[in-house]
Amino acid sequence: ALALAARGTADTGGRAGHRAGWLPQSWAWPLAGFIIWTALSLAFSDTPAAGLSQIRKLILLGVIPLAYAAYRSPEQIQWTVRATLFTGAASAAWGLMQFASEYQYLAAQELSFYENYITHQITGFMSHWMTYGGQLMLILLGLATTIFFPPGRGRRERLLASVGFVLAGTALL
Image (cartoon, rainbow, N blue to C red; front, side, top):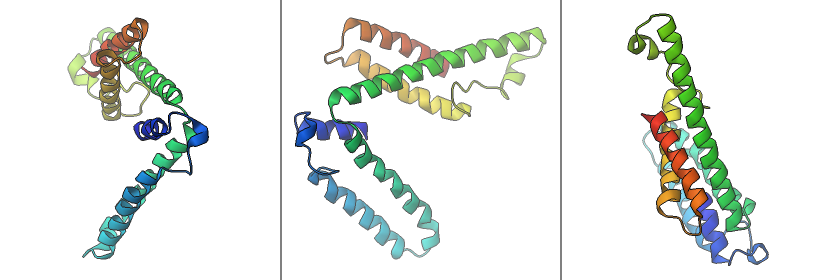
């Protein structure tokens, strides 16, 4: 959604006053088509009740116009992405501290690490270790983009992204 908002902002030269409506005209037809085809596939399905969960997921399409309306310049999007990546790196650091704490606890109890750690895996700021792993993979991709494709980014920002990348990569392992 942020990428689409950035594209919509770039289409207007980044000036909020020149954006008309809640959604660019070029986006309206594809979104409307997707919604209509989804509803038609449900209507003509052999088991329409099985497809109701897909209809609920259409609510997520509301994120696109919401992001487009909320962000008025590419700089706002860049700051949001930076904050997201920073929070992800902080979550990775917290997960590594959880790992160290759990390791010390199991060592003090003289328990087998592997047999006992499996029930207390690190979660970072998330509630489940698999959600945490998925979050870390997305954060790794974002940080890798900051490191390897740095248009207009300074050396300091690339260095901070590298530190976050190492933290997230270590926590993911």
